[in-house]
Length: 371
Image (cartoon, rainbow, N blue to C red; front, side, top):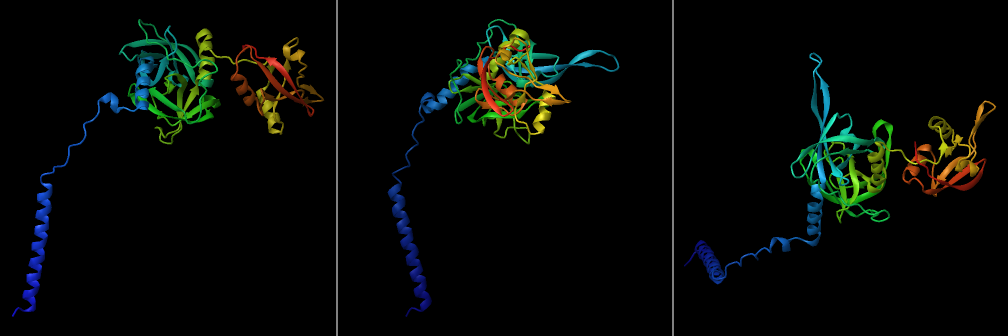
């Protein structure tokens, strides 16, 4: 008779035998059916999505128009009094026209005594400064050479208005890595950013396209390859891209750059009125909202419109007309007013909203060339 242990050993051996037979069955069944090979990859052109093909085409079209800029500063040896040039910084830029004008940021060439522009074909050309507009962080250089690249295309006046969410591309030389492309969207519009010497740069484009040191002055393009902005700054605790970059809109660039080329400086249009920044700030602190008119030229359009300036009487300032709006946009300070005027062009007619002793009225004035 079998004891209990012998029975258990026989049962275990039988179970193992059954498992081995099952395994042999499935191994034999699938041995003749090898795993099918992966499908072949499509040709390179067919593998690219339409959006990718468009991005590649834009980059190839714009690349030659983008330049790398290196700057130097004059140094003086304190012992020998000999002068020399030391590297100062680097940035980006792009061709504006067929005569060799290059647009970049003002802070790229600030404090520089010399600048060199490197083209995509490898040529390095000496550049001279044509004009600067620190208030908009824009500057224009000039290079001379044969067969210069074509300028970047720009939207016509009145078309190509940006929308939040629109795709944009940035090309530049971040950290010296030349002709780098990054992509993103328009994150916001009409951003303000503190600039040099207390100036506020207004109306900027905010984008999440990666912008890093060295991208400054490079172009921001739309999906059609048209210039929509000039990359100018980033917001980042670390100094590297944090997904918040800013660009000067092309509408500002198109207004400022021609003046820089023609005269070397940018002067915004004026209303033909006189203001006092210090006194206006003082009356704003006392609770008066708006811009006090301090001077109206005799015989001017403003005088014919009946605009009344402030005057001194009985040892105190007696406000006349106070500008509280322009073109339907409220203004509270002189900085607000100048920013609104700066968005417009010489010869444009604007509606100015005035207040005087509680009465409000509107007059039309033509913007004049600044001096």
